[in-house]
Image (tube, rainbow, N blue to C red; front, top):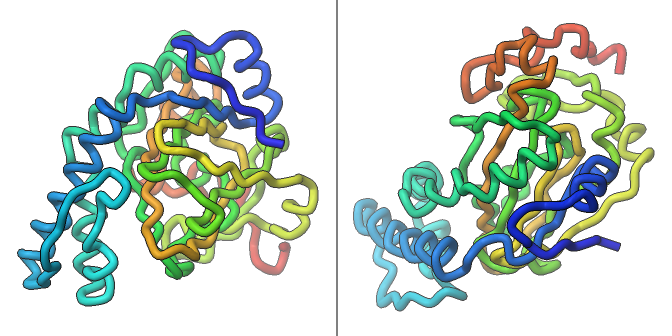
Length: 284
């Protein structure tokens, strides 16, 4: 059973206690669809058209609608897959998105959920994920955000979709309560964040039940940095778009100890910061 909370300006003691115990918080109607979400959808629609024209891909007649804001993208994927990387890199530069990425509501909720009066924003930890149909090779394996993002043990990631998540679209799989176990030892198999694999993964996952929230557009899912989660396979005919922002506790000793350094996006490797948590293959 996935417990949901309604947005009410500032989270109360019940929300804070639930997050502390479960490592996640589902907040309904967190974003304003008309003022927050719709401008991003409109900009993505326009951006897809610009990229297609620049790459010489004809998308034919395109009409914008909120339910099909990315029409033409699947055609672009089929015709010129590398061009989709241009879209992926460009969407995080949209002012309409940056305003939401730094939303004051994130900060208000972040302070309460992390139990801190002073939190920071990860400048390399925000972005929009594009999980395209059947592209499982780009999905995230079970992981904790801290391993690739660092900053502080006491931190939170916000996750909000630009279209309603259905079972076919591939809901994220979350393991409530896993944050209480601390940072799991890892193998570094190389290749960026996908190469940072939790040691004895099957054994670790067997200790927790999972949930797969069907997050609706306008809702926000908060995850603790140590909560295990992974991508769900997209078996629909559309792309799963999701917005992410990350906030950390400036006051937590773990952040102070590493001077709030970010992770891979800032050129810092997990194994250099935490060599004690690196496990050789023969050990795991």
